[in-house]
Image 1 (cartoon, rainbow, N blue to C red):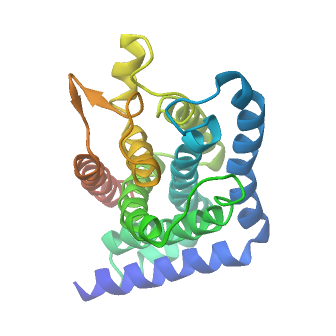
Image 2 (tube, rainbow, N blue to C red):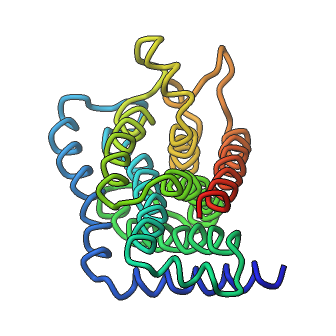
Length: 261
């Protein structure tokens, strides 16, 4: 148990240092979601108009972009695993007395802290974009981001456990990340689409993360949200879904990493 705790702390601290010391990564992590907000918001905002009373397209899209930032940052935990394997660092820490489970948890926690820092940077943009920001919103947002980031980082590490090169991993992630984003209700309500597309969206874990963040910012509004049958999925239920999927993904990542490496 001590080895797992030690490994978790050491690896998480290293991941955080890497993020802080890479200015280009900090800039790009903020520029990527900002680009979506500016391009899609300016391009479609006037055309689409209000999606609900008092909710324009940018206000609708902003919580989804926050979830998107969590996704891209969390999946970087997998990039880190592949990078360490390719350059030999992973072999060095595997022989250290820190435990393989600790390595996975450390990568996941490091990615989660990084995701939280990116979200806090994005919150600075909320008043500029006309999105209401209050202290209670921030306090409710933090646990949702943590749970979502841990689960998605588990997905990244799970995929990375089977990859041997950065090029292969990045190809898989590129094939995965855009369907996850576009089918998560970031740019359109998932219930106002064809039935087959709604089914795919509702098995996407990012859908529930994005909608949970949207409920925190906007509350429960008619015409916006995720419904299963006639039931509107509420915030606490979405947190439970995200948490369950997170435990499954992170547990699978631990098992796969221990078997592979």
